[in-house]
Length: 114
Length: 116
Image 1 (cartoon, rainbow over the protein chains, first blue to last red):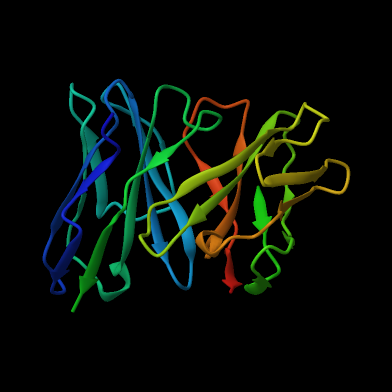
Image 2: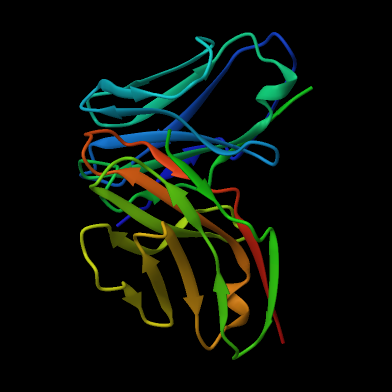
């Protein structure tokens, strides 16, 4: 069974640009969560999607958005990039209730903003 | 607010020895779950072990076990017979079991190096 796939693995952007990251969950998983990982702030929850609906959102500005498609694949978008958005963005999937189910993580997308 | 604290930024252990990673947490919920995740250099987070708060018995997974002290809000991870492949960053995480969301609160992590 294929794991969680995140594309691209690495991304370099400049300030002011926008970026879209993609996450394909494990087949059959309906919940997708996104996390931002930085050396200073650690791992922070961005949002979670289930059946194309956003169920929860972390404390991030409106520049961070996401969506989920009918096949459970998810994308997150960051507009008007800032230097502080440089981070590893991790996606995780689970079958249903992500908080107590086992989460399966992808290898992340490393975003560098110059 | 829920918080998770890992007070050991870095630790090292000799191969085949035992090491314990500390974690304390704070939550007002009565029903919650605690996790330890491992992040090797490949960056992929891997679930090591999970503990349900209402279960008094400590969870074990092969060489990995936890010491769950609910009253003290402590959740430490013991790795027995350490192997070179255990070298990674370890994160303690807390979820709110009563809510239907996917939010985990992570600690800052402990970098563990296993020395040959």
